[in-house]
Amino acid sequence: MSDSRPEVVRTEEEWKKLLSPEQYAVSRQRGTERAHGPSYEEFQKQGEGTYFCVSCGAPLFGSSEKFNSGCGWPSFYDALKTGNVLEKRDVSLGMARTEVVCRRCDGHLGHVFDREGFKTPTDRRFCINAASLRFVPKGNPPPPLLDARSPEVEKKKAEVAKEDPGKGD
Image 1: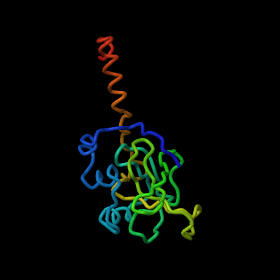
Image 2 (image 1 turned 60 degrees about the vertical axis):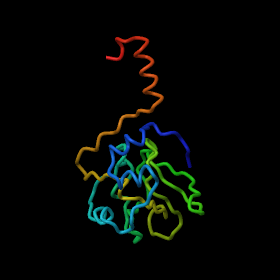
Image 3 (image 1 turned 120 degrees about the vertical axis):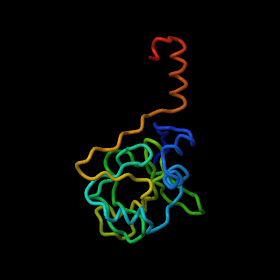
Image 4 (image 1 turned 45 degrees about the vertical axis):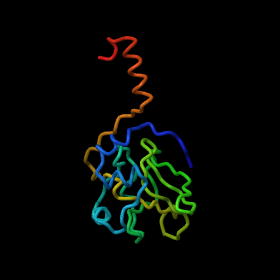
């Protein structure tokens, strides 16, 4: 489990401009979409490809690890080996669970559950909100990665530009 700081940081207003209301509620406010909703139905129909973070574009899951758990949310038995899926202890709602988030932007993805008896290679179920994912079919280009920017970096760039006005161009 990790509590590392994200490399992509935006203000709430910036996230609201980048995401739909549902995507913002799920990925930035740690919400949960309705089970068996339209996004899930679309997920069920998707073929081979890769699932990226809707907030920052980081690759998260592959279609070869998805399975139908019957829970009404996208399920994967493992994340891609990119290191972009972090697990964090979640003690909200009076229970202890493991939240999964995007390493690059700290976007909420869902939760992971162990030893539920699914006949998968890992016996894990990454229960993911479809609204936090962007699917790209196999052979298509990935979405652009959102640039790593934080208020601290922007402040430092402004300071450097003041010291040497010719460098900021």
